Image (cartoon, rainbow, N blue to C red):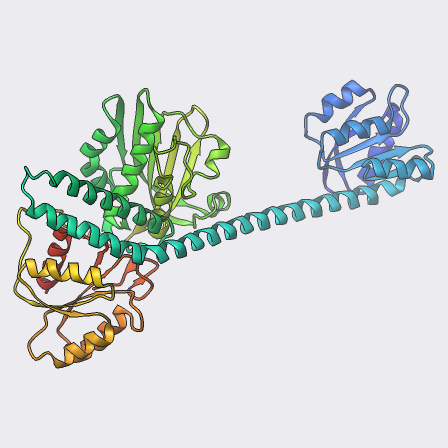
Amino acid sequence: MPGILNLLMLEDEPLDAELTIKTLEEAGFVCCWDRVDIQEDFICHLDTGKYDLILSDYNLPNFDGLSALKIFMERKLDIPFILISGAIGEETAIESLKAGATDYVLKDHLLRLGPVVERALQEKAELKRRKEAEKEMAALQEQLLQSQKMEAIGQLAGGIAHDFNNLLTVIQGYSEIALLSLKQTDPLRDTVLRINQAGIKAGNLTQQLLAFSRRQVLEMKVVDLNETIMELNNMLRRVIGEDIELITVLEKNLWHTKVDPRQIDQVIINLAVNAKDAMPNGGRFTIETTNVYIDKSYNDDHAGILPGLYVMLSVSDTGTGISPEIKDHIFEPFFTTKERGKGTGLGLSTIYGIINQCGGSIQIYSEPYQGATFKIYLPRAAEALDELKKETKLVQFPRGNETILVVEDDPAAKRLTVEILNMQGYLVLEASDGNEALKMAKSYEANIQLVLTDVVMPQMSGKEMVDRLRMLRPDIKVLFMSGYTNDAIVHHGVLDQGLFYIQKPFTVDGLSKKIREVLDYN
């Protein structure tokens, strides 16, 4: 192990110091050394932090080894401290070891110094490796605890989302139907509108929980983030207000990436809202895109980012910044620094869940009063861009005359769905579970163009029912619906290729358009 050794020696005799160095050099060490003999110089050199080893004489005219050892221990330096003495008794030696000395060597047995130093440096290296391993283990345990926390929240969110979103579907659906039938002057209209808006807010909270726990259904598309940002430009300016300058710095030849377009819009808007809150007196909000290559060295320092090619989306503000203690909790659900009633604490946790579910990673860089930067890394997609459909608000809901089989185990949600479809002119068949749906498909003599089924049902899942149904009616089209879906139709939250899905709670407009989209799909 001998090699280059940066050494600080506390020794008042120059000849003894030179003899010590010669002994170490004969043992194979290349010594870079400084000699001091008074307390002030010892402290000054010690505080530079550049040494691998301290060698200290036990007795000096105005100073002593135990006093030097005490100063050394106060600084909690992770290097060996070896005492050298012309004569040291057993009791004094034990006292020095108890005080923190690594070892001691007698001057008339100086040949021991080389092996003692080598052993001390080996023990130091082993201790360093052990501490690094313990640190790595602690980090892995922290990641495991975080993962278990997310899994527990995900299970909780999934448990409540299915039943809760069925209730919200009924609340929003019937309030929307009531609004369609009420005149603008009707005194009840404002009351029903408030019910509908409260239902929408409740549905958004459920979706945020599902997003954080990575249990929402994503419809992945290959997109150009530059186009996404430009399309959001006007909305972002409204979100941040006139006293905040919006700056965009976009890479000219940006790579494509695969995301859920609606969700990535939500990520950018949520970050803009946070930036606005951090800049109450105005400032700059900057969005930047660039192509990046993550190598292993960067990966080693940033957990969660695998080496590879990424599209980076950077969002910065010049606001109040984030303190280290807050930064450690910023992505946790329900954690918020806002006043009570001013925020749910789900905004950033939602972003975290969306980015992770898209296969990406998010890093935050901030100091108090120095602004904040969120860097989002999304994997590069080699495929061509997907054509994205523009959402349009229809004056009249699309209608049809096809036959639709509705399979829903929640009676109230089923009744509402049937009413909406009847309003649009469809002939509707009803079933409360998979077995009843299969019996109806066998006995019904006419054509059934579409089955609209819940995913999570007792006894038989919607996917299992559909697989059996297609043996009876191979040409039937399928639309899945759910407030929370398991792995039956998704993999890691991504909808299986070729499947159609609508999230509960849905609107009359949303269901009407989705039904028509599936029926008209070739």
